[in-house]
Length: 373
Image 1 (cartoon, helix red, strand yellow):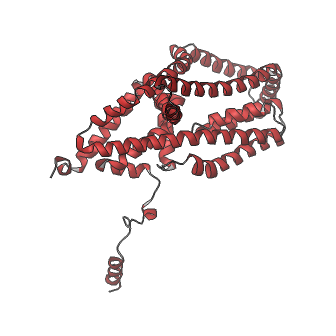
Image 2 (tube, one colour):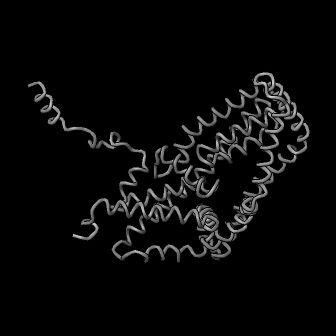
Image 3 (cartoon, rainbow, N blue to C red):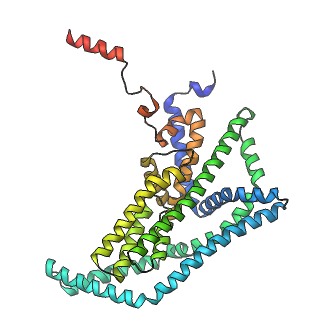
């Protein structure tokens, strides 16, 4: 009997919690390095089929990787150009939007003064205090990192993607030889499953984003909302952040629409369009397009998104779902970690046919007989 099976349960559980705490601390402290590397890893897995097809055409490895990376950059640049064209039109109407918002705030101040007896001077003091706190936060040293961080990430990701694709075989071989030889087949199986999960997730996510953007734009165009295409695409991009992004997109779209067309019917229509699209997304796109071989329950997904946002901001929220999927693949294939895989999954004991929380029928009958006697 090996030493793993003789260890008490609380000993193994404490080791698992300690490893989880170390992993969390490492992500929090090294997020500036790990987040761009993780994003590049997702893109590299997504571009791997493109690179493989180019290699089959007889291209050199460096040329194949460069062409695959160039194709991804062209696609992203096309989306950015489309958004910039819409943003230029939006910038031309900023004075009108600002005037509409000023009128709205003036009406709101009169309503507050009338309903709550708060004078205009007191309201101005509250607004100035909030504005001063906002300026202080923007002038803090962390703001520079917040602004320059995305720029540095956009610069590092293409470099990381190229290097990950170029050294892919070496990195996979390192992971395999990191474990004992008797575990080689299981490690290879886990790596293959992780690649399949990430590829299906990323491809499904791109298709879902395109469908959501199209439905949002069509719905807003039918309502006659200005900047419908811009708002539809932005809402679809924000929807990449699970659960929270859709809510933020709805609030942002309602505010911009209200500043241009404050009619209640239009605002209600915008909310209805986003609710309908979210319903279609959650019940059609996610189960049939984004769904991969690993299924996670909603509770773990929401908690994971919140933890990811706490550890690494918006990028951490986006990376939380694929990270949990990778962990579940590992947990399901390691004996001591299978309970954690059950926790991340979405199958209850009733669905799996387990009698974990049921008493055997004979025992229940015997119990009833004793009570009757």
